[in-house]
Image (spheres, rainbow, N blue to C red):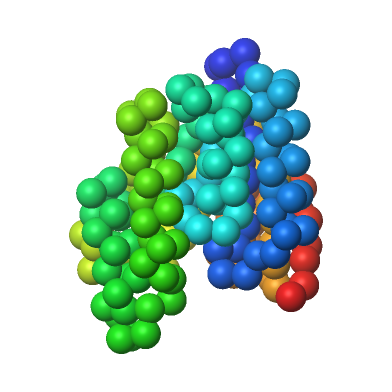
Length: 180
């Protein structure tokens, strides 16, 4: 466990496929964590991460007990999200501009409240932020957390990566599985 008086709980889950049940479960878990005064660690993606950050900021508007691990420098990640929404990679955007803007606004809010809340896992340039960068981010998340709560939809590979890394480090892992 870390040297603080509280524990850090990692929240991991898919960004692609969520629903109201997953969202409610994530928000409920984060409320339970923050009601005890514990900290929340998550990635800076849509879906599960977005719900966790949103809920954590309600309890910790100063983001003092929030860590958002992103796969690049803040500036590069913001550019990556904008480019991704415009379909830079395939010509077919996987996320909408509205989704990108909502996430950018949320990350900016957390950073303004507490610059230390944003943890840059690497300095990858926007064009270099690929699957490997996200999996490297998962390594950092697993290292920082005391316990992982995983909200895994359809056996998501990214969520499984975080689960495996946390277990390999001897961390307690609780997995909630969903099918879509």
